[in-house]
Image (cartoon, rainbow over all chains, first blue to last red; front, side, top):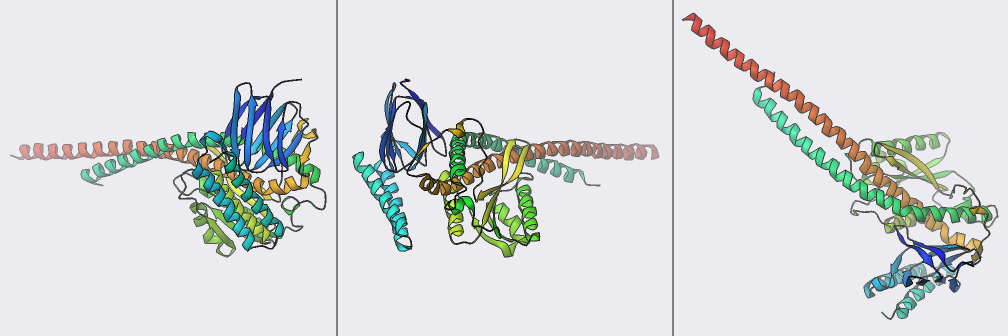
Length: 137
Length: 291
């Protein structure tokens, strides 16, 4: 069994990371999950949260705001809409994200034809806020 | 016959024009490099995205419950043409080529009895299209205040288009932009984004069986709107690189033409100066002979 796999983190604007890792913890839509080499091929969507990379070169953490992950046995790619290294994340940036989510939530409430949409927006908002507590901002 | 002073003024003015076009060419070259880098950096995302989407679309596509963004509304009566051009001119045939392609497309659709609606991105396209298609013009996105397009711009445009789609304003959406091949060649391209069309992925990768979390259809419903944004974002970046490439070669030509014109004017200037000198000499000599 291989002890590392190829990991790529890409956003629409650029590729953020491409390295060998031994484990990656991602905030999946149905709950956090950790992928290690030889994981079953999986595609999952992400909710806003923190992505942790464990590799021979140490650990790294990124804030992702949604997107999806594609896991195959020997490789994993995360396509995030927005990804920021945790160390570079500031309180202001987080507040901006929360404000965006709140605005989306309010907009959904106003046009509340679809209860599902309101719930989705509420969940997004809650995820964003939870992310802040995780990072103790 | 222009006077010596006129010629001198013209040479000076062409010289300063040449300076301006030369400077614009160099600025375009620097911007082109940046635009190309941006386009290259976005490529891995778009490629992977499309690969995953193609796989998903192939497995869900035929079922009745497939999202409308993928399967279409069941009709193709109303077409939305999203014409993406530059905010600025002086870039050769770049803007007019895109507008021309959109126009032929619109005319074809009209000839088939379809309804055409046009949304423009970029001021130059609006100017070119609005004149002939004022009645079909539904909106314009202004990007002139953004120096570099970001994914957020693409998301905004996509949001606008999706809102129109949800309001059943159109059935099929096509974007028009110029694909960047190299500095001298940019190909105006039409790409259908709604309903989504994905290129089939070849090779063994497509046959991998994935577990989907949550279900395939939920993922697809989540990703399709993002696919629209991704397609628009790549089109914006391609367009950005194409625009700078087109401007660079247009300004290169302009600089060369200005140089040729300066040479021609200089020869004319020298000739007429010589003519003046000869005239004066003849006058002096014939005056002396008359004495």
